[in-house]
Image (tube, rainbow, N blue to C red; front, side, top):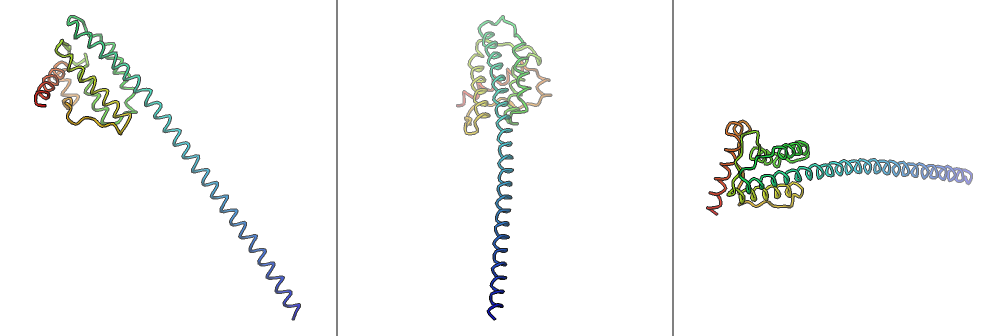
Length: 198
C-alpha cells in the first residue's frame, strides 16, 4: 500500500513538473509573440511617422517656395501701382504658377481652389491687367488674405476671419471667357462695395 502511494505521489509529482514546464513554455511563447507583435506594431508606427514627417517636410518646403515666388510677384505688381507705364513682367507669374503646381499635391482642396482664384486674378494669360494706384489697398488686402490662407493650411488651429471679402467663385471656363482683367475689376468693385457695408 505504501509502495502504491509512493508511486502515485511520484506520478503526481512528475505530472505537476510537466504541467509547470508546459505552463512556463506557454507563458514564454505568449511573451515572445507579444514582444514580436509589439515590435512589428512599433516598426509600422515608426514607418508611418517617418512617412508623415517626410510628407510634412516636403509640404513645408514646396509651400515656402510658392510663398516666396508669390511675394516676388506681388512686389512686381506693387511696382506697377507706382509706375503705371510699367509692363507686367510675366516671368514672376510663371514662377509662382510653377511653384503652385509643384505644391498642389501637398495642399488641401480648399486652399487649392482659393489659389486658383489668385491665378485667375493675376494671370497675364487671360488678358492684360491694368494696375492703378487706387488698387494698392485692394492688392494689400489680397496679399494679407493669401498669408492667412497659408497660415490656415500649416496650422489647423488658425481661424480665418469670417467677415472678410472672398474672391468671386468662377469656373475656369467662365474666367477664360471674361479674362483676368475683368475678373480683377469685378473683384475690386465688389471689395469696395463690401467694405462700404461693413
